[in-house]
Image (tube, rainbow over all chains, first blue to last red; front, side, top):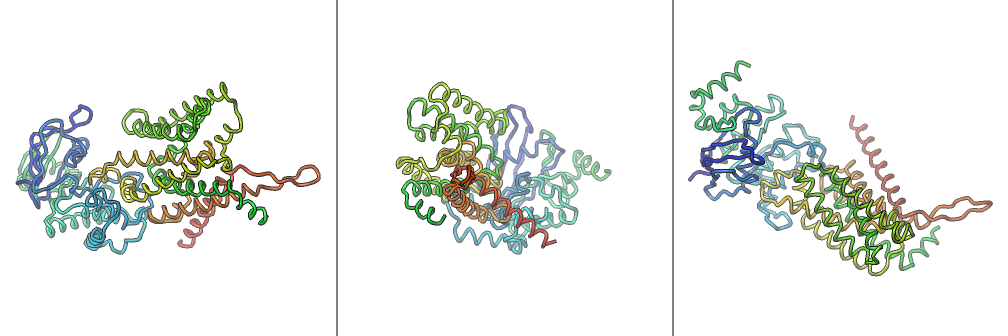
Amino acid sequence: MALIACQGASFGYEGNRAVTGLNFTVQNGDYLCVVGENGSGKSTLIKGLLRLKNPIEGSVLMGDGLKPAEIGYLPQQTAAQKDFPASAYEVVLSGRLSARGILPFYSRKDKAVVNENMERLDIEPLRTRCYRELSGGQQQRVLLARALCATKKALLLDEPVAGLDPVVTQELYRLIEKINKETGITIIMVSHDVLCAVKYASHILHLKNKQEFFGTTAGYLKSTVGKAFVGGERND
Amino acid sequence: MINTLMEMWQQPFIIRAVVVGVLVSLCAALLGVGLVLKRYSMIGDGLSHVGFGTLAVAMAFNLAPLQISIPVTMLAAFLLLRISESSKIKGDAAIALISASSLALGVMLISITTGLNTDVCNYMFGSLLTLNKDDLVLSVILAIVVFTLFVLTYNKIFAVTFDETFARATGVKTSLYNMLIAFLTAITIVLGMRMMGAMLISALIIFPALTSMRLCKSFRAVTICSAAVSVVCFFIGANTSFIGIQVRQGHGYITRSLPTGATIVASNLIAFLVFSLINAIKEKIRE
């Protein structure tokens, strides 16, 4: 069974439909990139997948025993975090919260998972550093480690490279690819950057307030909508 | 001076005042960290005005002030969060709306009933020494409840404060914890009003957190540091207020005692300035 399956789903705010007619499936180990212009419903879809928002119509099914709370989520940064006094370790540790349930304190196992993920992302040296004093790329790695702590199966990344410089952006893309290949964790990523999307992703979902395209990356590059969008970017 | 202090510390009403003061300072400082970081600093101010309004009502009808004030202020905290989450009135405007209305109601009730007597002034500007035994018992119980709940939900409060969206996505009931923070704040404020006064209680919540954020780099350090700063500042402020200052009158000097709330705020302000200075020096050295 598919990990996530959208069947005729629509999402929106206060009766306005932000995105409609979603029919797609995500299999275990896929790397799906959600592309589209600003306001095309990408962020709304993310909220829907996380069950922060119920579909107006249709349904979102999760298979393989995946619970919405077990999706590792990397949200866009908020302004409040820019001056938040927290060590990198504390931020990553908060990713284990879903595994805690109502228990108040973290266990030894939680801490082991945190250490493992910090090592995997090469942020062990940043452990006691203050989150607000890290560079943009380091902050994203910390948040990625936190997301990894929350999941064994799927990561949902909302514009992970927004505001990063080109070198750091490429590093982060390679890191995400490595996580996908080595651990088999499914990646769903929302991105502006269609060129990198087609470079790394196995599947593409193109939104324009409705589903314009869903399929493999190779199929997307041959489709009319894909040719127009990728081509348009190249001419910029 | 030492003798005066020694003598004072043997008085039961001073001991009562110090026990309540330490507990309230501790709770206020712990909750303050989250409130400041969540940009909810003004909630403390708003709720203290609500607390004052309800105290006025309680006094007008000869009811027990704390027992009426705590539930009503908790209700106001609930409303404030609901309004700022869901409606079109933004958070700060909602606070101004509710706090000004309840202050106005309180002042009106006071002038038609008791008038501005000492009791009212005590609640406006604080008086630590008028606490009776019942106040003490209630304050100690509630302060322990606030402290225990804070420790047990510490990790969740961190997650909800740092990143509400992520916390919600991982299945934390964020509105429940926001509500809990508001409730605990409401209790702390009403307890603290007796000592600090409605006008100054919000300082007890905001100052220690801001002070420790000058120097501390992690959430845990900020929390522990602000608890310590708050208790130390309370001791310094309270003792200064007990001793008072010597004022020249005619040919001699007389001792005037200072209002407790104001001296505690003043010592918090000094702590804040000292921490800011240390931070500035540290940054200079690093350059």
